[in-house]
Image (tube, rainbow, N blue to C red):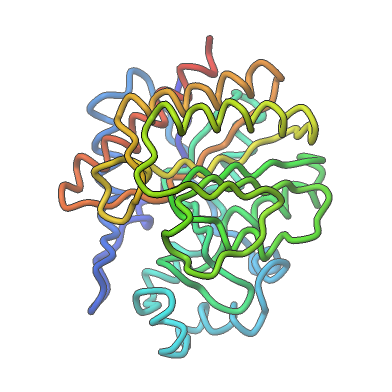
Length: 299
């Protein structure tokens, strides 16, 4: 059974002057309904303001919630912060937190949004407003839902915001495997960063993952994994610089889940990046990721 956290407000019209299309989140749900063998939907609540402010600068949180984000910050984010954007930006962290709690029961659950790993303390960036991964991880530990969390970021872009917001925390390990020459130009320092050269294909990528992930799991011993499962390492992705195939993404996700399951570690995934002119093809990549992770969790 695939457990998916989704809210209708994840989907909103494109904001003026931006190439970012929020309809991807609706298309992913369409793709899941087409191909998922069995699925249970869960509706998230908005993340309470106090938990957002535990990670982000309260002055920035106020700007977002009152729709007064300065234009310079909106340019950094990539789109204006409208009422609809503000709502989904509070729901998405709630969705990641809810998916993590469901994963503790079922082994795996997916937030059908989230992965806003570029958002920084006092500003959003790179299509990210609030950093749901950092917010959820902090809350889960503070409320005793987990003691040690691995944020495994396999998006093609480095999780610079997550690394910055959680720097110095001994109870949260940030691991980012990304295209080194891709956005952001200025990288932050994760607990462990592996920057890949352009054009890395399936075999080389998987060899690095196989060499890295078991050591991190055994040494850090997390009791929960938040998995930034971006599909933008795919060779056809508009914003990626790697060359994974559908089979490579499949092997990546199954390996992550098998390694976690072998150690009885629950996994909650966020969608992360995936970009292309054929938006339905991108949506099917995201849906396939969730389905195979759920399959592996049930083996």
